[in-house]
Image (cartoon, rainbow over all chains, first blue to last red):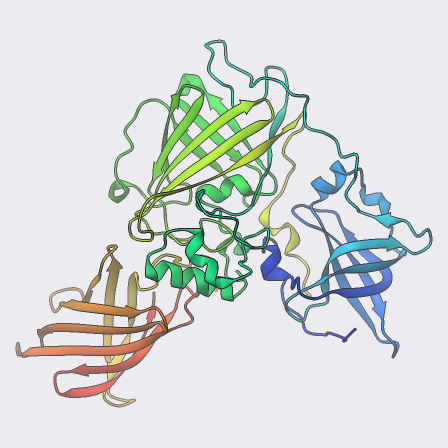
Amino acid sequence: MTALFFAEPVLSQRSFSSTYDSSRQVKVQGIVTRIDWVTPTAFFFIDVRDATGTVANWAVDIGSPIELERDGWKRSALRIGDAVAVEGVPARNEARQASAKSVVLTRTGKRLFAPSTTRRAAAPPAPAPRWPDGQIRLGPPPGKTGYWGSASTKILVENTAAKIPMSDDGLLVNIADADKVAPFLPWAKAVYEYRQRRFLRDDPYSRCVPAGGPRQFQMPNGFQFIEQKDLGRILVFLGGGNRNWRVIFTDGRPLGTAAEAVPSYYGFSVGRWEKDTLVVESLGYNEKFWLTSAGLPHTEALHLTERFTRSDLNTLKYEVTVEDPRTYTRPWTGSWTIQWVPDQDIQEYFCEDNSDFVR
Amino acid sequence: MSVHAQEGHPLTGTWSGDWGPTPTQRNHITLVMSWDGKNVTGTINPGPDAIQIGTVALDVTNWTVRIEADGKDQSGKAVHISAEGKIDDLSSAHRKLAGTWTQGTTKGDFRISRD
């Protein structure tokens, strides 16, 4: 192991690909000095002594504490002073930081923070709940709690695209596949490739900018719909990042035009029900965010049509059609599903929560 | 890096800086450019002495930009402007554009950054 002594701030919401180099592995052993059991990413820190006796402190990323707790792990699984052996993926920069693939408690040989084979299941299969008027409920059944959690993917690609090799956060294995992701105009493809070549490190979301557009439905802490039928609107409470909310008007008001709207991260949205699908049209977006972690660009001409279909209690299908003639040659559609988290509330998570330590 | 970066078309926005034939002879310039989906349009020095940009050609293979414009100088004489430069620090909100600037018979360089 090469000793690494340079320091760089760790941004709280950086994507995996921009932070870690999956092509490398690292093994370190040391004594736990600190445990940060915070969202969105839990870390512990260990003092590692090299062959010369020099001690360096490493940050070990063990992922979302919400996911860890669902797997049955608690903060108390590890204590300050414990000796551990860590195998993982090192940071791209020269920081002493790794994403753990394996953490073994030396004194017992027990493997910690491993995914459970008996992970708590989703709620039992059940039909989608409905309001007394028969309309689908996007929130919990009456008298229950819950929220929409993990998306089936963190990437957005055109539905017609064949399987494109890429990381979970959209870093292409082969940059030549960019054409398959979306029907880019030449400038947009060049910008997308530029961001990919820089390993997505320029992602505005990593600087705590809101996850505008479709990306809001791929956030680690999920979201909730608050349906205010008497007010003719649906609020979308976003659990991650800056804990923002978005308003979808369902009172029949017109959409207007992008030129009339104040550009914003979530746009101006109007919704209507088409049978059991909520169809939402939005425009008025600013140009300060990426459509996904993978670096898809857009302009203020962006017009999104989103379709939310709750096919049963546990499943929400999200489909988005992207229209932006200044960025893409034609409208295109991507989709994913989102899993219901029963009987729980969204946990607190602010973007800055992991920004207080420096490597 | 600013959290208010503009992540859309890289030329869209207001750019300011200067041009001149020597390091000491400089002229303030403001360029306002926007992308309409087919062309980049814009204005040099918006206001009473504004010059409409005729063409902007962006080569995305190397992020070079060529700008052509026809206007009038302070004496009212017709003048042609030709600028060619390269975008630097593309991911920054305050990305830069620098290169050569020819205005009439005067040749020099220019340096502008996005506001």
